[in-house]
Length: 324
Image (cartoon, one colour):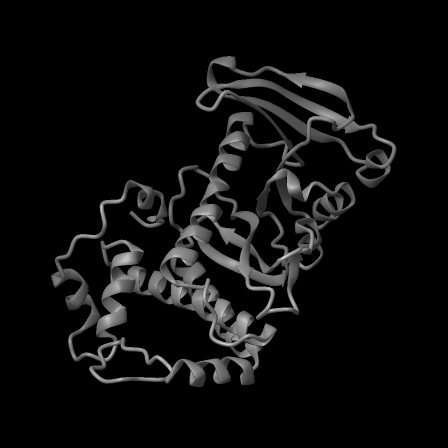
């Protein structure tokens, strides 16, 4: 007998797991993708003036991906390793409000850098990426499209220094240079001058080097922008832990994409509710209250503010609160 689901304020058995699986496999995932895009537009408008730690007028995006493991026997269409299947979720996160503005789902073997070919570009915005996105021809295409990038460089990048700019070493900065690339391929792939910033992370004892085409930002702000990239990692952890996308209803690619898009849509709906109702509770608390009272007669604002319960004090969950 199929297990049944109890939630959203109903006091009786709801939909069987098999029914949900059939629905996810039959309904085109693009329906949920379009719905998510509508929610993205609304959420980004609500959080357009949200502070994110830096006094910048530009829109700042963080780009990264996460792998969702699957069982190879159940999902043979998504091979990853010898005995494992997986899909990769590429996400472009607007740091104002931690709103996912673009989601792309691919096979786990797909390279991260390939998503740059599909990325929606906003002129004047800043795209912050890890060194997995180093591809000089694609980075030059970003620069040609009038967008800015900040990417962590590899230690073996070949370049020639043109100018050195003064830096305050007490802040962790070690150098701020205007460079040209000199590698056999990189010189032709990125023929314009670039900016290389060397920063020492004293907290973790690491030397970090960043490449950017933005010459107007203070060097320390460039380093702080990269630090803000961690928000996309928090988004992935929040989605995986609180929206349960490790177990899927349905085994087809359509079912997996559908469930991931629905999870993102739920996150966006909760973020919109928080902003529209002026709720002080964090996203997890709002999600918990909404999940058990969605069809109750009590207004959500009243339900959230009148609910007094304590979450698990596990310190590992502290970093999962995107909205304090």
